[in-house]
Structure formats: C-alpha cells, structure tokens
Length: 162
Image (cartoon, rainbow, N blue to C red; front, side, top):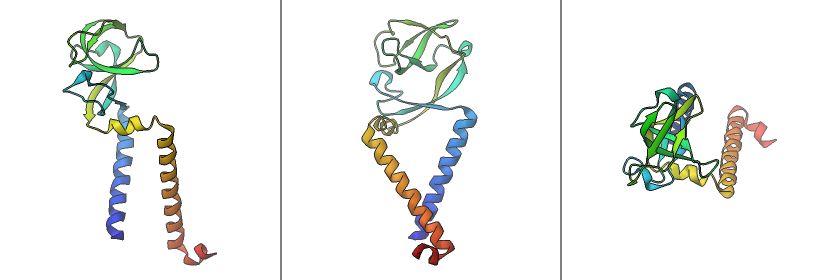
C-alpha cells in the first residue's frame, strides 16, 4: 500500500510540475465560468484555459476573456461577434442578444480561450472563501511536515527520537 501511495504521489507531483512548466512557457491563464451564458460550450463551474493573443489578431468567433464594464475587477468570457480594429462586440452563446456595449481593447494582448476543463472551476470559486484558503494552507502545511519527518526518519531513526 505504501508503494502504491508513493507512486500516486510521484505521478501527481510530476503532473503538477509539468502543468506549471507548460503554464509558464505558454503563458496560460485560467478563469472559472460563473454563468450559463456560454452554454453549451462552457457551463457554470467549468475552468477555461486562455493564452494571450495580440489584440490585433482577435477575430470573430474567438472566445475572449474581457473586463466587465459594469463591474470593475470582474471578467467575463464571451464570443466575439464583431471586430473593428481595437473595438469588439461580444455575445454569450446562450444569450438571445449581443452584449449591449462595444469594448475598446487597450491592452497589447487579449486572453483567448483555448480549452476548458469541466467542473474544475468550482474548486477555483471555493478559493474565494477565507475558510477554504485556511483549510488548504493547513492541509499543505501538514503534508509538508509529515514529508519532512519521513525524510528525516529515513536518514536517521535516532535523529527523530531525539
């Protein structure tokens, strides 16, 4: 059982490292889907994966993540239905009408959705609660202490007893 758990932990650690490396190299971003406005492409609780694209390269049909003009600090993911230079108009796939505003893109790059991971966004949304963050910190801290104790014990059983 100990060997199997070691293999599983090694695989998870390797997957996490590969994912982190790919994220850094490819400049990937992540955003949870909050509403059903993009169904059936994305559902609430999904996690969309984005990559930065030059603002001039944004095309009709791209799903972009933009700041909400009516809610500073929040972003939304909708499909571009009109692109006229730096000005775009978007629409949620499930919405009957286009978004009421045209947005001027002022940044050099825009996050464009390249993939989605179903249901994982729910975990990201939980991170907004203080009690969840505290619990995660406690779990990670405990795991690090247990791992350190095991590593120390493997080197010298006498050192742990002292």
